[in-house]
Image 1 (cartoon, helix red, strand yellow):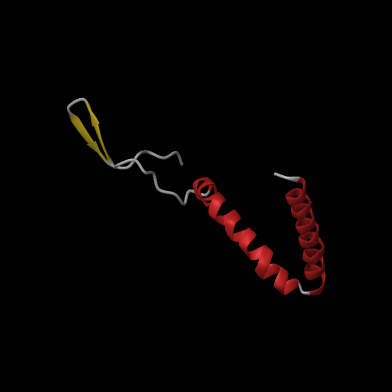
Image 2 (tube, helix red, strand yellow):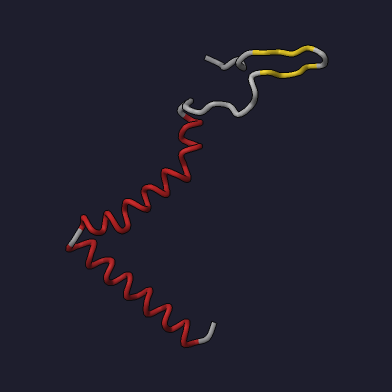
Length: 81
């Protein structure tokens, strides 16, 4: 990465930070639609599996049947109360 490209990237970053702050202060609804909502949606998508597991909203991917030796065992696994 050449020095010109690095300087351009730093200038764009500074411009985005300054304009982003102005938009956040003067137009909070726009800031929410452009930054807040996508960030919240990504956080929900990437943390949903853990939240569902902690709140017993998930279902085990294991099949309901298990083969133990020559015996086929059917049913749901026992969950602690």
